[in-house]
Length: 200
Image (cartoon, rainbow, N blue to C red; front, side, top):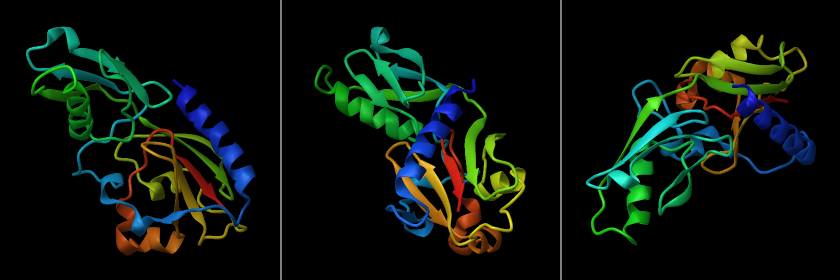
């Protein structure tokens, strides 16, 4: 159960040590595509450890239930390996449909979440308590910071980052003031399993 967060933490440590405190590319939270935001009313984003049922209409042999592995992928007949973590079920269904068109005329695919896991993230840097956090969805960044004891006296509150691996790697920058005051909707940003928070 702890493997995804441990793997994320190890990945993050390597990334942070390679980037240094003030270097490395990042994207401001307000420039992030809307598909990578989430709130309590948005469509669920799939995470590592979730089990999904992929149903292909009138193709029972291709319909299956799969658990999303620690690499964010599932394996499906004909489709092969496909990244599921970080995607909405409807978007994943469309992607599977597109791949199946090579083998089936007008495939119809639905993806349903059979079971979901708590959101597991890691937090590093200038916070009260570093380590792994287990949060109930929807899990906000401000909630995670509070659970970790908040930024320390030595923290640069203008340099709070979320490292996200799925569906592609991003280093997302926030300021503490933006989170507290909900500037640009920062307080509605939801974390996903595998995210790593770094407070510099």
